[in-house]
Image (cartoon, rainbow, N blue to C red; front, side, top):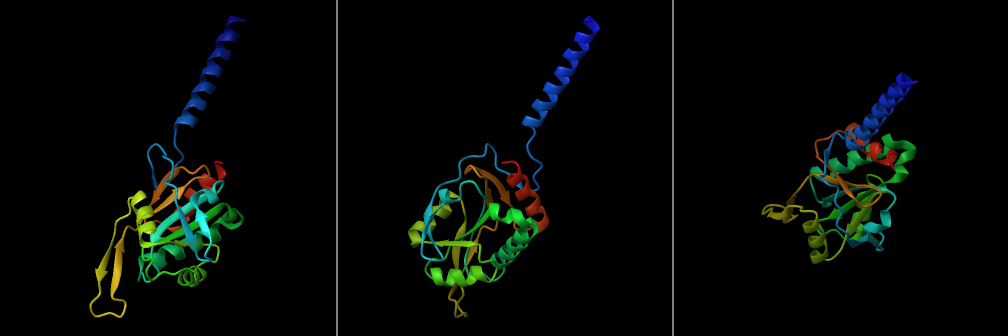
Length: 199
């Protein structure tokens, strides 16, 4: 009987250790986890249909957040094309992801311009704009670097250099991941599926 109890006690210890290890080990993300998963900074801006949208509107979904502009020659269209492929790879789980694009160029990026731009990639994507002060405040909350660079010999007059990473916010509004621009669609899909399925 004593031997039995010792074996059972040992078994419970192994189970307890396994559970503790599972709880303490982070999910195996391919992108960079945000330490301590802080609450994502809240904001309210205007979407491409002219409606006010708050970050809180997307509670219950995983959010992919990116800052860019419609006249961007390479980084922004590459990012959005990757996100469109991610939506395709997610299949039926795509409705559990909200893709948000905040413009850093509100002077040129009207809601109408943003709608045309989003529709070229995926009409489910949500583009957000506001006054220069409003969009600047949101970018600063997320520690985004951006600056206008003059283009003297171009009709565009200027371009915008900016941070190329995107952010992933979980269903509870916690900032979870920083996603490098260079990541593949397959790796991004992997990370998003982990969050979607961990709900």
